[in-house]
Structures are given as C-alpha cells and as structure tokens.
Length: 228
Length: 255
Image (cartoon, rainbow over all chains, first blue to last red; front, top):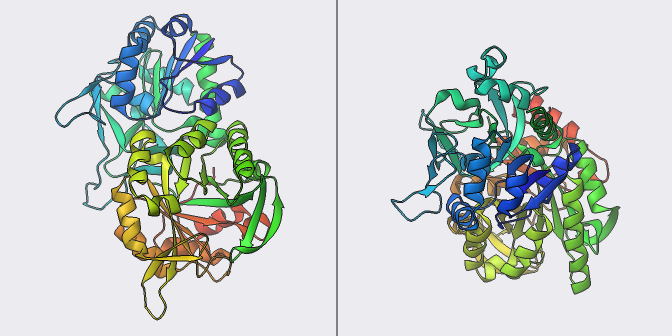
C-alpha cells in the first residue's frame, strides 16, 4: 500500500487519483501506523513549512517518516513535501527562528529571490508551467553507481530534458550537497526542481497537476518503488 | 523560463456552462467538467470555473462539480464567484479546487483575503478585479461589482495592489468595457496593473481573434490570458492559440 501523508491542510484527492491512475493502491492517511506499514510514502505539498512541520511533529508522522526513509522505503515529496526533506525552513516561523524538516537531505529552505543576477524583477509566487532541466548529476546518473542520479533517472524516465511542469510556490530548497540536485528550473536566481538521495525523491512541481508528463513521473515513482 | 499561460474560463450556472455577451443573453455550451477535460487534453494550462449561480441549490451543484473536476482534471483549476466567507472558501478547497477567486466578498471585506491566504496559502487565493474605464477619464478605471452593475468608485489598479499586499497570489483582471466585445483586451488597463503589482496578472475580457492573445502578453504585459466564448464555440482551439503565441516568440507549453 502506498500512503499519501495527510497533515490536514487540504485536499489530497488529486495526488491519490494520480497514483491510482498509475495502478497502485493509494491511501490518504494521517496515521503513523499506516506510515510504518507503507510500501511507499508520498508527502504532498499543502500549507506552510512551519504549519506542516508542527502538525507532523505533534502527530508522530515526522519520526515515522524519518525511520522509514532511513530503512530505504521509497519516498516522494511533492512541492512543500520536497522542502520538508531538508533540515529546516523558515516559512511561517517567527522572525529569526527555524522549523525542523525531516533532515533526510542536508540543507534548508528559503523564500525565492525576487531579483535575478542581472537585477531583473521576477514574480513571487512562482506560478505556472516552467522547464525542468536535468543536472549533471542526473545526466551522469546511470553511470554514477548508486548515486542520486540513478534513482532520479528512473523517476524521470521517458521525460525529455526541458519538459514543462506546473509549479506554484514562494519558497525553494537550498541543498548543501550539489550531488543531491537532479534538475533545476530557471526563475530569478534559479532553484532545484528535482532532488534525490537513495530511495528518497523530491519534486518542486506538482506532478498531479502537470497533465500527462506529471502522470508519467507518478507512474515512474510507482514502478521504481515496486522494484526497490 | 516561466511560460505564459492560456486559461479557458467556463461560466457555470446550475451545473452547466454558459457565457454571457456583456453578462446578458446567456447561451448553453455544455457540461463544465467534460469541457474542462477536453481543454486539458488540448493543452490548456489551467481552467477557471466562474460560478454565476444565484441559488443555494445551484451552489451545492457547483461544489459537486468541483469535486468531480478533481477526479477528471490533470491540470489546476480555480473556482470563482459566490464566496462570502472563509467557510465557503474552505468548502470549495476541501472539494478539490486548487484555487478560489474572490471578487465582491473581498471588496466588502478585504481582511477576507488576508485570512484566506493565511489559512490556505497565497497560491490558493486569486483576487478577481472587474474594472471599467471611468467616463471621460483616460487610463483610469474603477472597480465594479455584481457583474458590472455597481460602481464602487475604487481605483482598480490600486485595489489590485492592495489585494496583492493582503496575500492574493494572482490577480484576475477583467475589463468590463471589453468583456464579450471581441475587441481585444484593454491593454492600458492590463499593463497598468501588471506594472503595479508584483504577483501574476491574468488578463481577461474581450478576446476575439488570435492576435488579441499575443497583444495581452506583449503589450499588456500579462502573465496569463483568459478567454471563454472563442474556445467554447470552437472559433479557436487552445492549441492554435499556443502555436500562434509561440510563433510570436512568446514562451508557451506545447509539450
């Protein structure tokens, strides 16, 4: 059973439906017990980092996910779910403080820059369809042994470099390790749009809202989760 | 680079799609979810359902429609119209809408934008601004309510900026002068708003031919273009519009 983690901030039906279309039995659940029994875990993106972090810590979801990911259970974080893979974020936190993430990947999350390197203004939130560009890590993926790229190459199988996906977010991740970045997207100073390490994956876009290409990513996740 | 979005809008009454010509003489153009799914397949970047139902029973039908849409659509969709309070917004988002579009309710109580954005995130809250050029005034527009019947006297661009400050994630800007006219967007209005607010502006009202879409983006500086009747009645297809925009050098999603 695939578990879509519900931290009670919104409707998760489209994520569940996307996984069902990919041919898996997906249950939306807030229960750490379900997470403990899951064949794979999907953490969707709804609300702010601090809200999600507090709800997940209080419910026991945070510890359950950490322990399963450490055991190598396939994990996909979507949008905020990608951001929660990192050590900390400050969205929604009182000024000067930080909220804890899963800490699966080293790094943090911050607001998207409003200006690019040339000083041109970019709109935040970053809303709409933008291109996902494969990183060196991903391109080298299949020859890079068990590095991040290999799993991500499976996650993005059949997707051409530069394909468009649907984004809607004001925050981005800042990975401490370049090797965890599998794809990037240009907006303001740019940001990682696909990250991976071992069996843990994160996509900043919404595959469940990215038409046929998005469904292909969910299908790839289901396929690779079953092989792991 | 972020692509420019093409957004078909479906006016919905009692669960059916209609489109007014200057908000009267409604014509029936079919089942909203079926039509939206066809737009999804044709490459639409999002769809907007605008609920013009007045009755309580009609509203329940719209909530059912939103839930049905979350089963069938693989792209984001917005439901606009008929919101009065946070509870109504919560119900629509719980039914599956990615975004809600607030209009009169936000004008009457601007704090609703702040509260809704805090609860559901700025990405979920659109502010719809229906603007009409002030008589005699060049490049000055005021905000209208109730489908163009009430002039609030508020400066439309100033209101869009306040909505953005309060946490709206996007502005859906409709020219009441152009809506249904097929004369093209009010480009001066669109540009004035796009240059003033730092969130995306969706241009709406007046599209009749392909060139109007490109003008909205190139001259109006809009982030997205919205149209209804040209799509519903098959005068233009979404793909045709996107291919035309691409031929003008505008980045669009064609894959």
